[in-house]
Image (cartoon, rainbow, N blue to C red; front, side, top):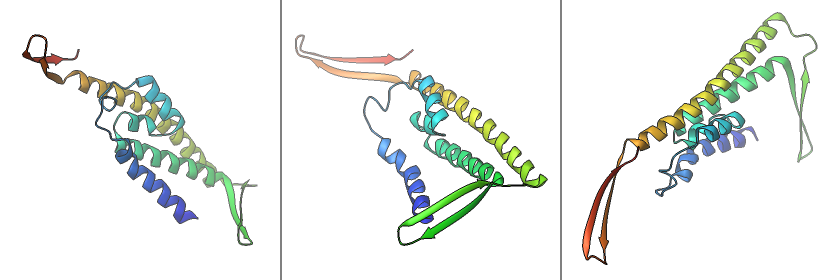
Length: 160
């Protein structure tokens, strides 16, 4: 089960760029910074992926999930109960008396998780703004034939 979960997470992270890559107008449209921040607030790294920074988004996702798991495991006892062929139970109980080292580890990991999460959201907003600025700096050309005037038209436009 654990291997299946790891394979699923890694496969999802690797396939997101392939599945979301499209050569259409949406792929080259402006990205909303508020939406990018909201996406990263709820799913770490999703705002970066929305803005085209897939590896950065995957890195934020892995880092935040590792900090979350480390924080939970420093304060909890984990026991896996496998009974029968299909019944799998996972119980997480709070430790009765964690020692000072476990408390410090949990606090450091928890504070680090909060800091990384806010950095993640801020970075998602900045990544979408950076993406929009890169669109603004491109020249767009248009080559068209006008049937009414029987002439070709060539335009060079720059977005501002």
